Image (cartoon, rainbow, N blue to C red; front, side):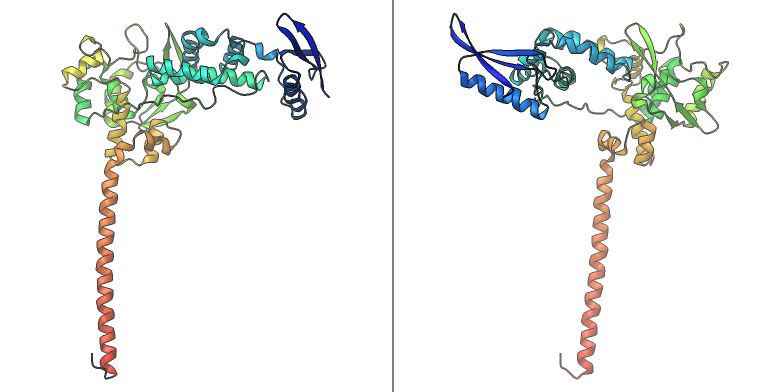
Length: 390
């Protein structure tokens, strides 16, 4: 037997303790069993069997706190994650996870508690915020499981809220042109976003050398984003560098922007030399930012500048771009992702499929009718040749 059972006395009566050695040879025990049979059952399951299959969990290790796993886990994330993503993790930990779970022993957390926390959070915050917070807790507890502090992750099989995909807003080409004209010196920014499909940070990361007039391409090589009061330069999303087509109108409006600049100079910077600050479409009447104001003057419902990326996708699809070209332009990992995001742009394809099927059925029907008529005629001629009266 890999353990022994010892009886001891307490004010509440006799109790039993399971004494055993950890895999490293140090002695330890589990106390508080009211019945010897309960102590024996625990010892068999958690000591003898667990050691034989390599699933032994040190009861003392389970007393580690959730916060003990936070900094080592975050440090590992920083080796490959972008600063903006790390900032979102730090915010989720500080606001949602640490206050609820930071000083809890990992072995004390139950699935029911986690589900109640997720349900309450979903009632107060968006699905994205809730999912990010739960995913952070899940990862920390998964690390505790890997370190053999707990048997199972209490975040397994948790019911999460469903993200509601916001309806895409697409500007027609003439609407995009009207908005751009009312943006003043920022017109090239709007046309670059609305016709080339870049993200705001990718537009901020453009250098003069990235604009290739010979091939009519713009090379997307970096992403510049604001984190707090600082600007961070990283690779594009998913680290996918790419080339996007540059329509003639974009090339024309960029010429005065590039004039007098060197190859390594930034394309878009404000009068203080800073990247253009992203615009918000929130606030309806109270919002007086330059992009929303331009939309209003152009008679267009205000939208976030990121939606200009959707506009670029829409214009490209209606111009006849195939799905693979669209995927490369937008920097998606796969064509399947592009189809999933922009399925509504291909609704007209369903009409084409219906028309194609109808045409095929009609042709097939005519062919079958002709074949049947020819068959009847051939049979009639055969019967007449042998003197059979029809």
